[in-house]
Length: 253
Ligand code: MN
Image 1 (tube, rainbow, N blue to C red):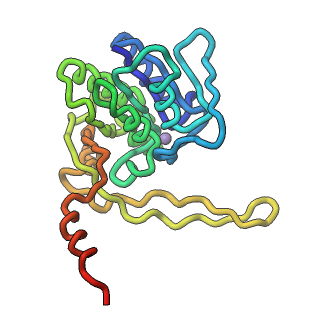
Image 2 (cartoon, rainbow, N blue to C red; image 1 turned 90 degrees about the vertical axis):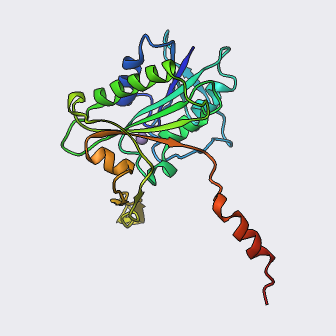
Image 3 (cartoon, rainbow, N blue to C red; image 1 turned 45 degrees about the horizontal axis):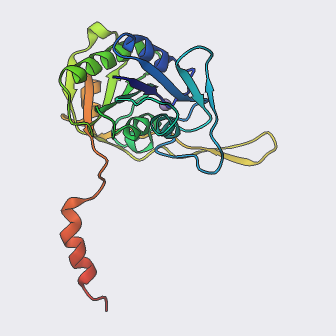
């Protein structure tokens, strides 16, 4: 039994340190993380430049000049002479609710471990300005979920997307199984000028929750619950298969 830890905020991130500490003693742990912040990297691989792996002296921390997916991919396809049973990714500094999942490197790292022996877990702290950050709360939640998975295994292809409110652990209202909600469209890109007068842009902030009612991840977290959303990788719109076949058969005048 071995657990691989990864993240998208980079190997120095506080959330990763808390995660590592809280899982200590559960199983042998190995950290493989990017050398910098790769938030928003989604499921990208680095294919045009070589990856270099640095081991932090005498530890089981490994740092790669690549994306979160690179880290997990390498870790389970040849970096080590042993195998992992499970990936835990996080604790991300920020929410991965609804549409965030499409952009998230944290969730991508978890998804990359989907063929291992046990379900994978992505843990994010829904950090709020002026509060916390309560990484300890999220790390403790991660430990509880991992222990539960070991005691009562779920299907090995299960991906759990976990979002934790930014509050002290004893203020949590409990766990809630949720579906992904949706956000409003993102805020407009922010335009500026660089020091040489050339135009630059920043990607705008994520939109607020739109489909965020009862049953969604947004709703659970807003009400103090840990949101646990089961994810699958199949993006096929199964319900549209037949109508799309018909659509293609129709002659176009
Ligand atoms: Mn991140």
